[in-house]
Image 1 (cartoon, rainbow, N blue to C red):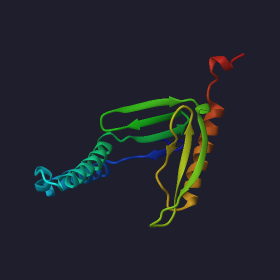
Image 2: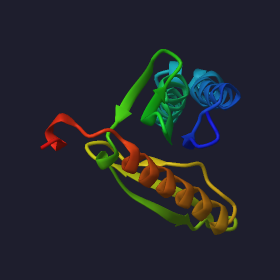
Image 3: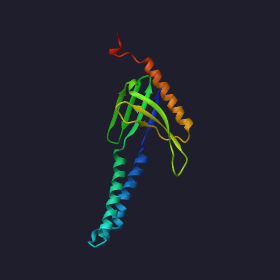
Image 4: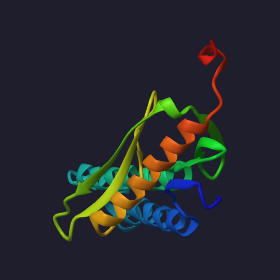
Length: 168
């Protein structure tokens, strides 16, 4: 990243992936392990144990799959252009974006029931799901990132070479 490049990052680090994977593994294994005598026996109450075990397996395997296949995203806007990097442990995709494909850059808030509100930056990209930044503890930090992204996008759009269709 150069000094004039601005990045919007929503990165899932390796420790975060490992933690989510271990939690998923525990949620999947521990209910079945603990309730195995009730799951393995065929009694009137066995379906209750089956439901609890299947619920744990469903939630646990979902968390485990998210830790393995979840994507990190990074939008970079700078003099070399705009690029979108989608990264997972098994695959890395880098796409070059046209400046006109990047739409609104907004600051949005999250109201949490158990803590203070947080803010994030949302970038609309044509033909794709919106991109989100990580959460910021105050609105000013999120607005600063949104302003930097808007300025970089405007600067990039002004200096880009004309496409063949633009030349008259």
